[in-house]
Image (cartoon, rainbow, N blue to C red; front, side, top):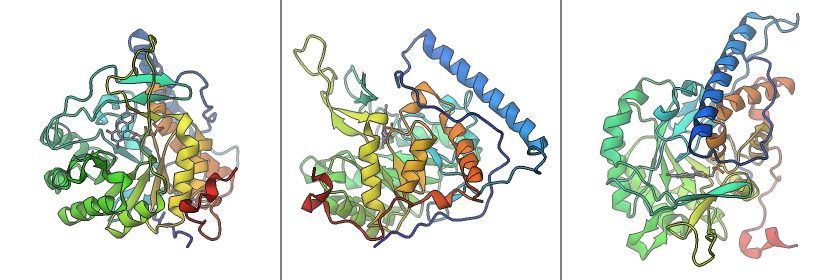
Length: 389
Ligand SMILES: Cc1cc2nc3c(=O)[nH]c(=O)nc-3n(C[C@H](O)[C@H](O)[C@H](O)COP(=O)(O)O)c2cc1C
């Protein structure tokens, strides 16, 4: 059955300036530490101020004599009252807690912020090295380093409550009880707009399986969290499965309001001496443009079998990527790894998406959604049809 989209509501985005579309960077997706990093932040801040200045000018400026530029409705409803001003979010683990970027990015122009994965107790993360560059992406094995849910609430929630942008807390755990307890501590806290369940974590209760690779385990943790909170609940799918569709369906049936897809792909790198894998944790998660085709395939498959909104993640680096994910049924996208090289990208994409809708003669971005989906859902992956050469 073709999925019904719930990308709805009312609030139009503000007027937008003329601008040059974002062009994919062929060079490294990772900004090295040190002076160049500081430089790129300064460049990003300057670029943002310039964009804001142009935006102000455009508001006052008539559109080449053709009257004011048409406002475009970019709003998107992710369920349970979580209505975003626009469909460009920032992905967990790539934007900290938002506060780290608030000096260089106008965070209130984002659709939403998914903060770093948060666990019940503080975690120091995995042994170093934790990141390495790969062609078209990066491998990371941060290991969910975070100060724990109580410290996150104490340190950031009050700031988030003062922002217009909704902050969605990414939650991780090793057991159902862990997830439930973290969510209980987030429930009702001003400044917390929703939960994104990162279920690609070891499931100690089921002999080391990840929740994300087993439909019953995924449904179990989703249902338990659903019972623990009325906050909007997004559940993040892993691409490291043979057939994501039964898992997506099970999560939707268990009460998730939306799905996010995908998390990183499992990979390794080899050290220069070639006597062992490079990362301290051996395994890392691959992200960046290299994973976009996989993420597209997952979103395409999932959007055909669930009736709740799907937010796409994986290698978004320019407007064309956003449009591709919308075409396969996503109602919104998250930008991740690309932020490390270009923190201003997500806000620019908001403007570029509005421009694209305007250029196509639309009043909203919604006509871009689902245009590449088939009329009828495809055969299950178990038949292997997708992989036939
Ligand atoms: C350094 C780093 C840390 C991440 N940490 C988390 C995390 O804590 N929780 C989570 O669900 N995903 C985490 N992710 C995965 C991203 O949110 C995203 O799903 C993935 O990177 C794919 O998107 P991208 O290709 O745009 O980066 C992390 C990714 C990176 C690169």
